[in-house]
Length: 104
Image (cartoon, rainbow, N blue to C red; front, top):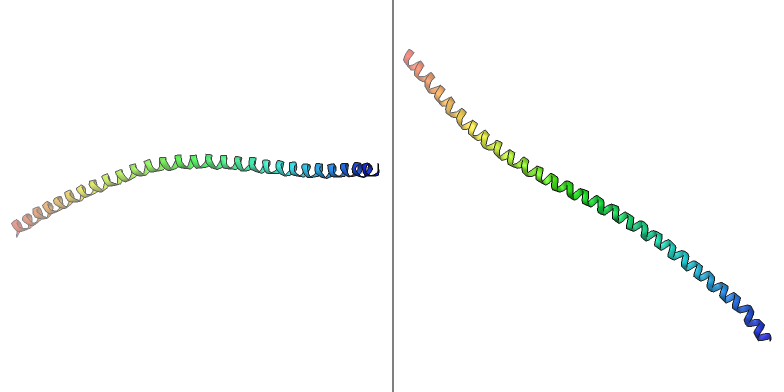
């Protein structure tokens, strides 16, 4: 009976220790679960931001392509205007030279 009494007193202590370890493990599990939930939420937010940035990038790429095309068109028009102005200037100089030659 003495052994039974010793075993009986040790069992609750062992059980109590096991319950404490279980409670601690459950606490760590809950904390890990909460951290995971926060990390998942952060990841979802980052994925949303990335999607917005990718959409903005696509829109800006289209706008840039349009601006480049317009710039090339303006460069061509500028070259044509410069060519015509040079031609007109040459004609004016020619007319002035003839007028001066007639007077002289």
